[in-house]
Length: 124
Image (cartoon, rainbow, N blue to C red; front, side, top):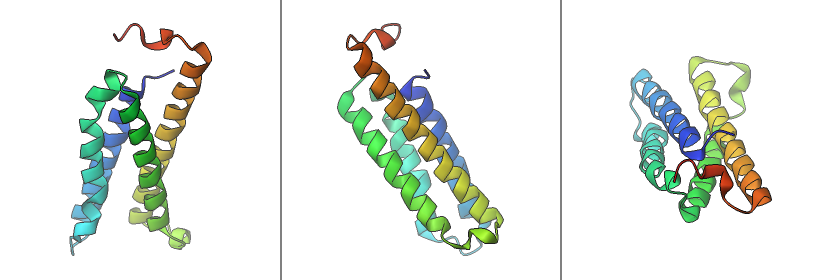
């Protein structure tokens, strides 16, 4: 299983790059388009604590990523039939968030099953 801090870094980079692409692609440059890149910066800031296996940060990052994925999927809206560039990038961002949450939950379940933290002994 991939370590959560690696998944968090990849997810945050996808959100940051895709969010900035959407921001600069829109000529109006709405400030709400910077929500995903700003959350991506927060997720990148949590990577150090995920590497140190801070459970509070782990659960917070999981909840924040799931919430952001739902907001981005909702933002794509019901106009998915058109499949413009904006909708494709939004779906990519939402998919990245949902895959990251699946990895977080899978890691948490696997760690609970072993009950001795032997999964990440190589990191400590």
